Image (cartoon, rainbow, N blue to C red; front, side):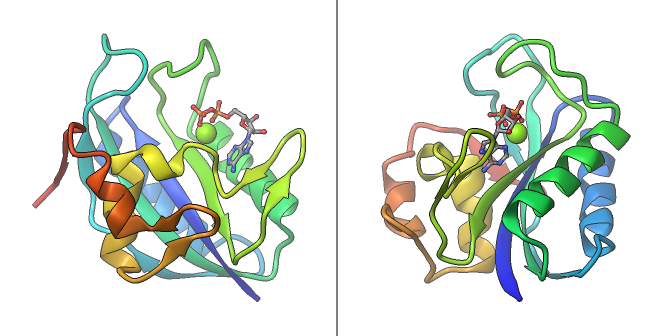
Length: 159
Ligand code: ADP
Ligand code: MG
């Protein structure tokens, strides 16, 4: 079994319930169990500003799936949430990113782990720090320290 971290995001069609539903669905993936989840966070869109704010969370999954199998399962969940791929950074009903897979480093055509942008995104680092305060991102250092570099990004915990 390996602990994988998943980043969840949504900014369309009741984003909070999209993310809450997806957390339940992660727990029901084959050979997998949800072992921790962050609070929900609200964040300003990155890369394409003219869209609604995002709701984000991070989950820890204990899984016996291989990383590529897990990515495939995540993409199937996105599809079940009517995720449409239009243009980069477009609004989406559900985005599931495989952030970390144990301490593995993967660089396939379809899968890069650690996720190549997670260390510079407060909407990932903040919820990740909530559920794993001391954890490191392989090759990048402690999430807490990386967060210092994201001070300009607006992220707030949803009470
Ligand atoms: P983004 O999340 O960057 O906005 P998408 O969700 O549309 O973009 O993902 C685009 C592609 O990124 C997917 O087809 C997938 O194969 C690839 N990808 C590479 N590494 C990862 C990862 N760690 N997690 C999720 N997708 C990844
Ligand atoms: Mg994605």
